[in-house]
Figure 1 (cartoon, protein in one colour):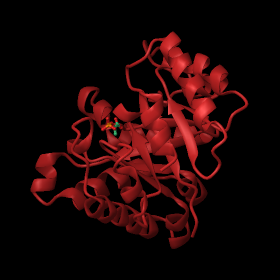
Figure 2: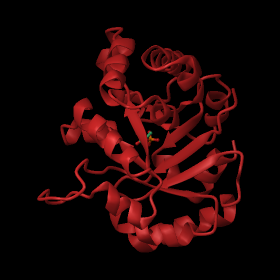
Figure 3: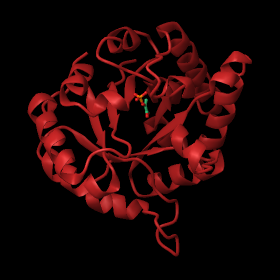
Length: 250
Ligand code: PEP
């Protein structure tokens, strides 16, 4: 079945507001009318409003890089889903490996965030992926399966179908080492089969699975040609207008 490819730029902790506005405006001129790919920009919290204004009226969507699962409360430094909704976010990346690694994010927390996002009509981009040691120990399928079971637990089937999964092998993030198309396809097929087992074949046919990890203009086309790869979550190459535009227009 045809799934609309989704390409998201994770700007991480880069770009001041001025820089973010400039990049977003350039991307609107270059790719703001693209309709055969869904394009999402995920700037820092402080640039969300600026980027929302810059992409207004274009087809580009806004995403955040994290959220809290509670709607409000004494959680210093956190941002809730209603706050992100108010500012115009349609997507939120949850469970990025950097958050798992540096901020002790667990599958249980990520699951709570997914449920909170759906409650408010936002879509999670749920990141999973194995470390190099886990791949070398032949544990990729086991690790990704456990992560997904935890993250998708209790989600209604229609919400699961609308979710975006990002398969991001940790060893490929920011390293310049991209997974081969065969490695990526194999992991994506495992993810889709698991979604079919947890929900249904219909849900598995609908869910979009992005690949992330050193995606660049020169490797995106061969990755996107694989049957179970429905898009890309892009870090480094999303920080420059020319490379991100080339990826979007693969
Ligand atoms: C990421 O941070 O999600 C990512 C894939 O980064 P990069 O493209 O730089 O490897």
